[in-house]
Image (tube, rainbow, N blue to C red; front, side, top):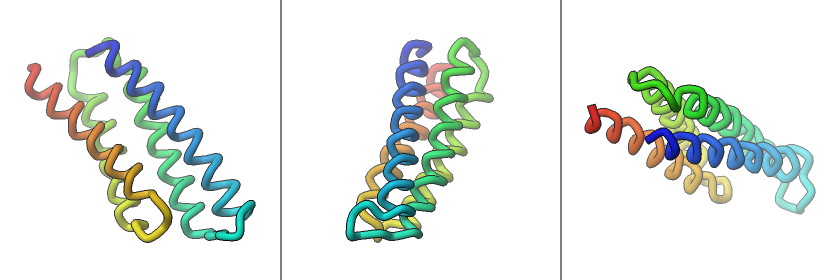
Length: 114
């Protein structure tokens, strides 16, 4: 579980960087013709929550308690709810579904393991 938390934490941080850059360049600045400020703001908020969840997973990879998994679950659940609320903007529902799957899977895996 330690290596999996580390890999998923790094993946979430990289995905958060991608979401932040995409939300900034295409949502707020409008490098393409489909400038949408609301979608950009939602992507930047999602990026912040995913970055926090990734940092939590990396920081708590050696701990056996549920604290890190509960925190990651709550952060990724909020990310999923935000993306579902902004479903009409591009493909954010896919990132939200991915966040929900990762958060629920780690939480359930840790509960079943203990």
